[in-house]
Length: 218
Image 1 (cartoon, rainbow, N blue to C red):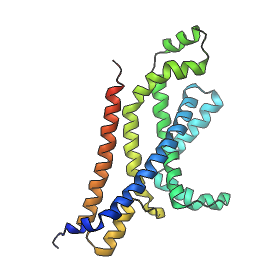
Image 2: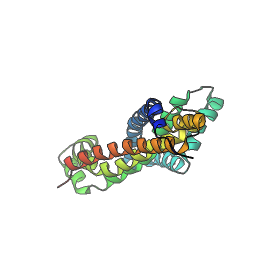
Image 3: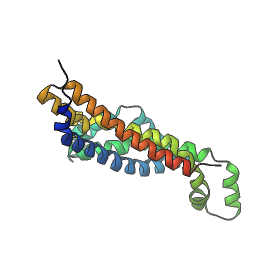
Image 4: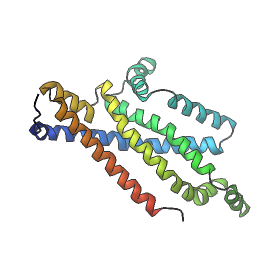
């Protein structure tokens, strides 16, 4: 079968609309995942036995199960257990928050624990409370070390949105599937989908590289 790349131009507005939904899910999900992951990571690093155990159980549970199972649990099983039904978009965002949060928690924990204990002791010796030591002394240094692994997690989470096709979210992959099912132009449509994903991940990589260079530890 001969290829017809003009098909891509015809359906480009629909693909861009799907990409927009992909970006929305990723941005909102990662913002929530950053908050959840930071809290869980600090619980793992500095919490007592109980807080550490709670955070550890959460991290291991999420990292030990596929995100597609997690989103299907949120969309299909949670309404049965709680009586609260969520729409596909909300389930997708919540899945990114929960999934990314578990991985970010370990990134945060590792970054903070990699800072010399001498800095913590010096801050406490100056009379600073523990939270000020974390925010004003350890935080800025840890944040610089967070950027490279966070970049990897952001890209993984963006690509993970393609799995939400299983609950009917109209993101980029779902849009490509619907277009391809209508005209059977698999080569052209899936190539266009792949290129759009490359553009999205490439833009994210460049942005993170710029931030990393500006905040590099000398």
